Length: 212
Image 1 (cartoon, helix red, strand yellow):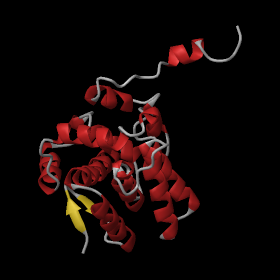
Image 2: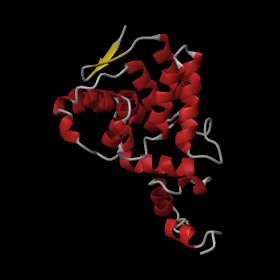
Image 3: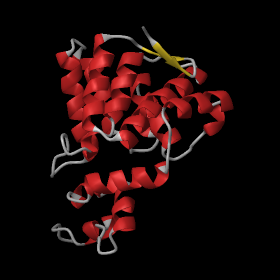
Image 4: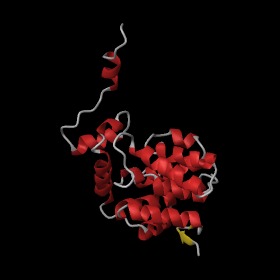
């Protein structure tokens, strides 16, 4: 039987059930509840903006988007977003989705910390960014009604979420600091680790091996 939260029906399919089990086993309560909220916020905002979204693909994109922060899926030499994107792509192809569908979800996850660009791509890409920006940054909360917000948070609570998600980001990236260059993720490392030294884009240009 399908589950509905704030008017959003979570598809009752084998793919969705498998995605839920995989992510629930890999994440703690903070990341799992966050990922489910990302799906719900993204679906609500997409509907409010008149965008039709494949909810199965949106669900996988949302649930897998932070999977690269977890010990099971994290690598040591690439951005955590790519870790989650690769896991989602493999999962979707294994469950019969097309290469293009898997690619859209890959993009949704890989670009979810890159502002603005996902919103100009397919709805299945944009939906994850819409959800993340709502849950983490609190952007455009006016598009979510008070009743919808209460229903989502009741189903997936946010206890001390701001501090816990920042800690989850740090825990998932602190052992691969070079992968945060050029992203907002280096703000997290700088916040928790006073010894963290950011790479400087201007200095890289000024000091590279090209002669004047």
